[in-house]
Image (cartoon, rainbow over all chains, first blue to last red; front, side, top):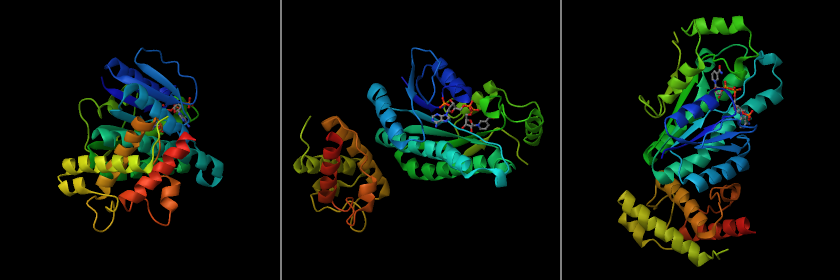
Length: 230
Length: 103
Ligand SMILES: NC(=O)c1ccc[n+]([C@@H]2O[C@H](COP(=O)([O-])OP(=O)(O)OC[C@H]3O[C@@H](n4cnc5c(N)ncnc54)[C@H](OP(=O)(O)O)[C@@H]3O)[C@@H](O)[C@H]2O)c1
C-alpha cells in the first residue's frame, strides 16, 4: 500500500490530486484548515494549518502512527494575492510567505525525516509560471513561490543521498478558488503568453503533476512548468 | 512511561552508530564510545550521516518512550557547546528533550 500526504485537500487542485491518488489505490492523508468533504475509505482528513510548525509536526506524527510511512508528499496548500507591489500590505506578503513557503518548509522537514529513515520518498512542491515570468501584480505571491523553488533545489541536493527525490511543478491559470478573483481577460492573456490559449483544465493540471509519481518522474531538483516559456 | 536515563541514551546512540557504520561501510563506528566525535574534524560522519543518525534516533526514542522529539531544536542550536560534537553530549541533550516531552 502506497501512502501519500497531500496538503490543501479541502478544495481545488489538492482535492483533485487526492482523488486521483485514491483512484490509483493510494492511501491519502489530507491536510487543510477547513472541513474536508472528500469521502473515501482510504482518505484521512487532518485539520492542520501548514504555517504552524508544531501543528504540522503533530499531524505528521499522527500520519506515521496510522500508516507507518510516507512515500509521497505533495506540498500543494497555497494562497495567492493580486496586487501591485507598492500597494501590497506587508501583512499580506507575510501571510503568503507563511502559507506558501513556510508551509512547504514545515511539511518537508517533518516528512523528510521519515523519508530519510525509509531511505526513500518523493516530494512534489507546487509552484507557478508566475515565477519565471516575474509576473507583474503578483510580487508577494511570486516571491513566496520563488522561495519554494529555491527550497526544492537545496532539498533535492541534501536529500538525494538518502534516496529522497524533491521536485517542483509549476502551473499556469487553472479554474479554482485561487484564480476566481482574477479578471477573465487577464487570465486569457496569461494563457496566451504561456502558449496555452485554451487554458488548463483541472484534469490536465492533475495529469501533469501526477507524472511525478506516475509515468514520467523528473530527476531530483527539477522545476517543471506546464507552459511554453519563450 | 519508561525511564530514559543517560545510560539508555548512550546505549541507543551507540547502537545506531554501529548500524549506520555497517550501512555506510565505516566499521570504526561500531567501536564508538561517549568521547566519539559525531561531527567536525576527526568524525566518521559527514552531514549526510549526521542527518540519518538524528532522524533514526528521533524514531528510536518515539518507539522507546512514546514521545516525539526534535533533536535539532532551538536549544541545541543556541548551546555554546554543540550537542552534536560528541556522543556523551548528545546523550545529555536527548535525556533533557525526553524529560521535557514527558513532563
Ligand atoms: N489555480 C491556479 O491557477 C494555480 C496556478 C499555479 C499554481 N497553483 C498552486 O496550486 C496549489 C493549489 O491551488 P488551488 O488553485 O487548488 O487553490 P485553492 O482552490 O484556493 O485551494 C487551496 C488549498 O490550500 C489550503 N490551504 C490554504 N492555506 C492553508 C493553510 N494555512 N494550511 C493548510 N491548508 C491551507 C486550502 O484549504 P483551507 O482553506 O481549508 O485550509 C485549500 O484546500 C497552490 O500552491 C497554488 O499556488 C495554482
